[in-house]
Length: 622
Image (cartoon, rainbow, N blue to C red):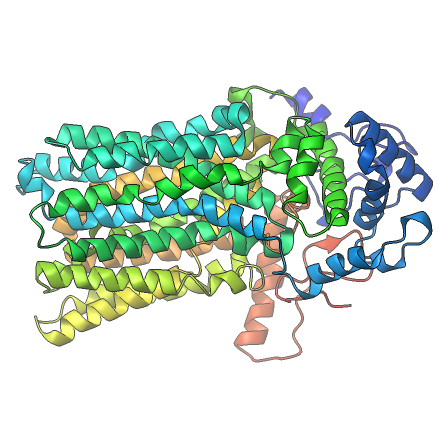
């Protein structure tokens, strides 16, 4: 993008006293590329009621939603003043059912329609394929190399074993993730999930019948294409359908099902350990979760935001009605989303795939989201979880277990990973994404270091027990933090115009480095032994902590459209705030135990003159 084009893109449009499309006063416009005041802007604030009602009527006629005009008027007023919905009067006064629905959003956040929960659960089942496959190869790795004639300790055979194990991640990182944007554009979210599920079904079944490592690699690459498309789409689909108050908890069901897949995989590995076809069953069994995914996805509504992006507003209304308790919520959300999308279009011009990818790094608001998503995704590989997910059986064997008991220990790892993912359902939308990461990374550092140092003990029951204990503790800290956050976070930070290509880039980052890890870890283990490998990744945890501290803003309980303003804050201003405000506050509060220490908030809501949302408080303070 040229400097002139970029300058034009960020300059507020119109003249004083006029309104942008969507009703934003040009004199109040917040620059979405350089939000120096860190204001969270309500795009409807300040519009006179008569003007807003005329805008709503024009919107209803333009989008073929005249039948919904009365409720749209109410919804627009609620969106304009979300805290004062009980004070609306006249023809737009809310009835008791509408008031109850809006009150429940505040006091009973989990009272949501069954169709919303079905939608989230159905598409997240597909994540179990990914988790199950990780542990399938974990167990099969000690069997299939000798069958394929690549079981020696030579560099060639070590690379080939790593290549086969990393096949799905190579297919995802180099093909699947990059297909997400164009396929989403053509087929929509549901269509993409349906197609990708087939790639997670037939190649997985085929992997159980392969007679050479080349055939096995081909099947795993094909599976990787489906995994990449699915992993780039499912969290977006969940984020676009979920209300802001519980979006994090619903989107993190992706991680919950990944963890459940890991648990099922380790259980199946144990169940078939003594079967003559053990490794074939281990590799083929992960097809099972893809079956309900294929069958149930068309019972779920299409993403309303995707339909609005395609200017299919009447269909978006029909879809949103299935995902909310009352039409007043539908009217509010659709009108507010439309208003914010109109502003996005001021800086996100219509473009092709290549241009959208380039804009991930050239448009400041999008670049900051790209940086933050990249950081949380690569941190997942830096933390060391996948060296255990891929090679825990090998690691436990080196710690003194025999093959069967090494698999039992791997089952324990899978169980801990799944159980400790549950707390994140509550903490991810209260404690927050950023706070979870900053708390858990130091804990992962010392537990991984301790597990590595315990391998220096002489062979004994105490050694094997302590190694397993610290590995399980490491996993317990990973599961509610770096486990659910990356995919949840990356799915929500990009504007709608760049959401598919941005998520594709983020997932490609994660899975590319997972493939590198899968290929290189056997060499690291051979050169550095277990203690060296664990200490190396403990150091990576420290690096990841500081990357997150300076580059990853909080997103909890913001609408997807409000995040435009969060990521409009320059990185320098964000980092300066952390160093000069957040660090001194933390030191006073938690080191000096000064209970009266107060953290000045970075972001200020524009729709509430007296209330600020503090990054550390669970509720607004007035």
